[in-house]
Length: 364
Image (tube, rainbow, N blue to C red; front, top):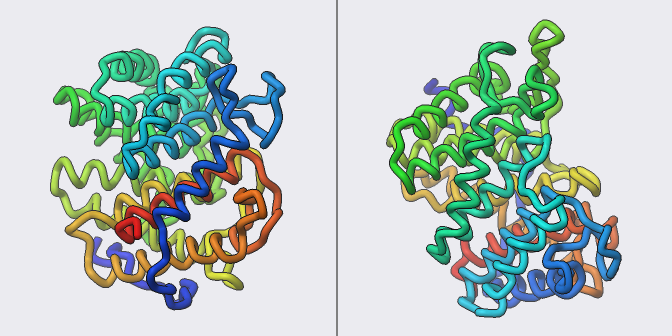
């Protein structure tokens, strides 16, 4: 346990010094405005998957949550009513596009939408967002079963034996945040149960790696793929539980998992988070950064850890700003190279990074 503090690894890339006096507020604003200009489908009320297309079929469900999260970031940063005006359009637009329902076979899809609804409620206090989140949460809780793998949240309703990091980490975050709002002990207990299951079955405590999944139909075999987004949601779940309970183990695990990401999931030639492709993979880095940035802001994080975490985030942000931004202010899957393949997920990930840099560095 004492070894899990996650201090700097010898293989961790060493970020270059961060240039001073970057106008991060403007950098973030330009990125988020590009998201709206090139991806927002104002007629339908959702974000298109590819830029500058009016095709109403050009849409995927789970990335909608992450795109709206960026809009929420921008609204919290600026207070601009133009951002808030998108909230209700999106609330109705994604439901209509998904067959007039927020529910589907994939629990992780529902979890992402639920988390965004909680953020919308948090910044507006409008009951409809919390009601939608609660409706989703009631369905999501059915993912927990002990028939397979001794517990854990199933990935899909049609595959209760598949217990994936992508369905457990976000569910743990939801449970903790629901507890903060409604103070139901059952939510906090479920958050702890999810954490304990994922830590016991998919987390490598010695390194900080978070493995992809466990298959209850195949002898509880573990698929040891490691992605930035699974690291990020584990970090987020641990951090939420630490804030509620004050138990140091949660914070140590969050720091350990974050440190592993920096040391093992980075492009060593550029010292930035690695290219994980377009499509689903395009969102992975952004998910990690969202929860990594929240961890950085915790006042109880060790000063040494905070210093290197901030340096890493700033180096990634500066690299994206200087090397990875296209003429249209769009971002691809490689933060150190322009025009490296752009879709909604890759651009959103870049926006999350720059909005985080604006927050961490006090906007200006």
